[in-house]
Length: 473
Figure (cartoon, one colour):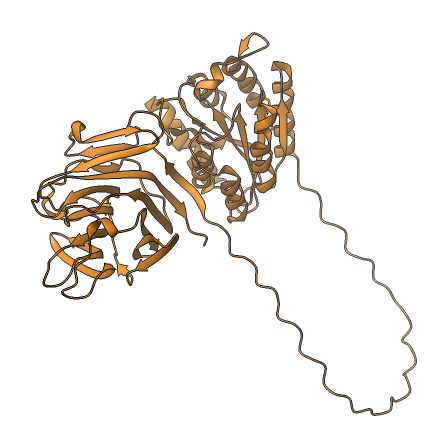
């Protein structure tokens, strides 16, 4: 295992060192190793066919072709982030590529969108004159709620000049549209494979397209030599009104954000990409497409005593992004505090937390606030904005607070923008704080609920989904 990783790193170094040489083809094979690859076609498991065909084709690649391999769904049964770089891009080496393919065991889900998003980092050592290609081999569509069509379009817009080709292995007619869309948005081609022999032909065609030399530039036009025409007679001077100004150029629609992570809590267990801090399994449950977490007693984030703090255990994407959580919750004790945070620990919960909470005091009226809170080395800074509630001395009933809620945390450079949306009158109304600056943010995305003081009663939080999207550059 360690030897294989060292060889992958060595290949990347060789690739970087040769960046000034002739242009090369760089191909990343993204291989489906989800549980459905155990399915049989022509009496042979699809994964067996892949392990037979791919090593032979990889060994026949032209010497100017660099190869990388990524796989998904081969390590964890229920994870939507089970993606691994099996071999970094480097000169073709049968020992590395064959070992990578032979390690695959079909097991888990099909996170195509997340896998495609991770391929961008594999091309960081390629030279500007290289041609870059992704060959996605899949026997099914996205099963983790992502939008692989949008991610393929996002890849095509990046400065890595990559094309995305798709080999659809035994794809049902109703599912072909999504895989064809990935190829179309990624400026590539779709190759169907409906048999074991068809799979070999489809992969061969994908490789042929990916290794084909670019067309030569058109020759310059031949110069045309003509005798100069006689000078025209002087034109009469005619005063005319100036032409009207040209119409304004159409404004292109801004690119849509690409979905990088999504969990809608399907099934009956918490996915492996979550870690629970201060766990109490009797106080949370996954069922009916929701995560239910129940808070009781007093707690605060800065004391580190929040029970069932759900923290993402995979790193956040580099660059700009927006994280959101949608939930519903009855405000029934006046001390509920659901939160979405960038969390490292109790003294540095990654310095930025977007947090909505309710406050009740008859002398001031009952109100619901958006609170933005930042802790650095235990030093706390917080900001409040009223998002729901009566004037001073005019309390409202907690049961009148509308549902559902959406908490949002947006990262742009070194600035973070916390916001909350409330479904008031059938439309989502947003309240946003001014930017909060963080120079060295740490930690990961986290969420949960607590009661800010000890009160009678408990509070259930019903989480519909959590997602992270990249922001277009």
